[in-house]
Image 1 (cartoon, rainbow, N blue to C red):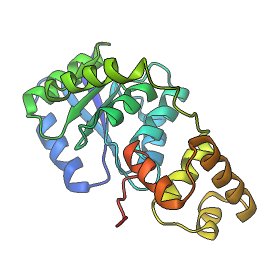
Image 2: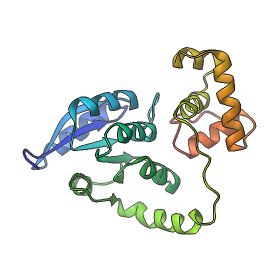
Image 3: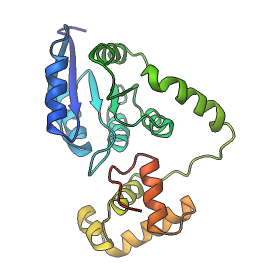
Image 4: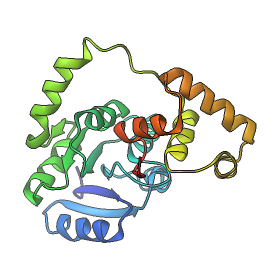
Length: 219
């Protein structure tokens, strides 16, 4: 890889982005070429900068890391995305990998582990933090074969679900997504039908569990 590994850092906290930049640039052969503060800006920056590795947070307001990963991979199938998150829940790890991420590191990892993950992902390998790998594999083996297929929501339904979970009303969602209130209501009905959930509290809990929402209201 000529000139070293070029990194895009995506996190909604400026201090985290600055800290990662400072740490990673101490590593030989690694260069941070850009930052993004949410999923939407990550998609745009990925297309503009074409980094070798994108370090992606999961829980961000607006478009979260899972959805951003899905969209980046759809636009750039060879993109290499490394998730860096506080979450160690196997369901969230699985959702991120299914979206197209090549690795998953918890934020409690040290610089040595993060740098190793960056290099592994840059060269086409899969990397999981040792602290989550065992739980993830056990969960996958124990549940995936026996569980029914997860209901598949459209990209728009996932956007609506995230906004519902973050406490937005029908009018607010319509304004954010530039669609009619009637269309929002239709999406909500379709989401509830697909997930077999019947109220906003249940939808919110599902969104949090799946890593779709980063906001955890009092339930």
